[in-house]
Length: 267
Image (cartoon, rainbow, N blue to C red; front, side):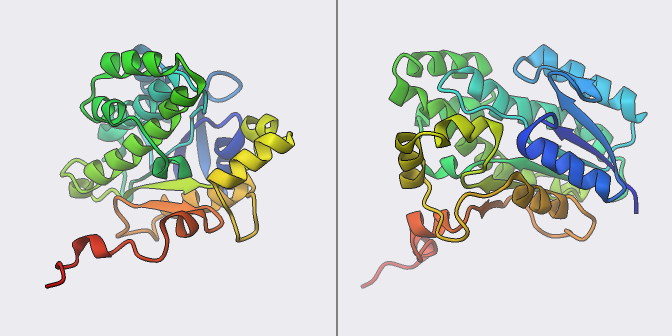
């Protein structure tokens, strides 16, 4: 069955791999990125997101079966939150009325292993409250130093995974029969990570933060395959999950027990 997919960040990396996979399967893909795709749009601003959503509706004549949000950056600056969080949640929300018209609507977003790393609680709270001006002010303050600046990235992905859990079980999403989930990659070999992985120091830093005992660094295609499955009609009941497709990094970092938080205390 041929479906119409909207893929953000489709000009490079995971987004490009996802768009390519969908097209090889015979689906119609409307790519959204800054340039070189079907819809040129800037997801870093509220106006840009609205314009991109309107352009997508025009391009598809209002017929959308699934949305896969891959657009993102990893810079230690406030704009990272604008793109990675608001550029995803606002864009999906803008297209939700159109998506709800589909027979088997689906949506998936790209989170990150960084969602498990240290964050700025203040920044995450501002994002989840929908206060973009405040989030950007906090992000600018963090960007004053490189170490704190990285919290813009981890916080954006933590907030995104939390938004997915909240929204996925709401009337707007679950009530409309739309599975909404996230995928959290480990270290993906793309143009965005090439510079960091090129030096011995950068490689050691990455591998310490994201240990991947299974098959080491991963190609973008490993994430694309999962995103395509999540947004296919066969996925009927998965909701609110952040799936750590990460070579085992989550299991290494969090260990074998992620359940006892709900156990009754011992006498």
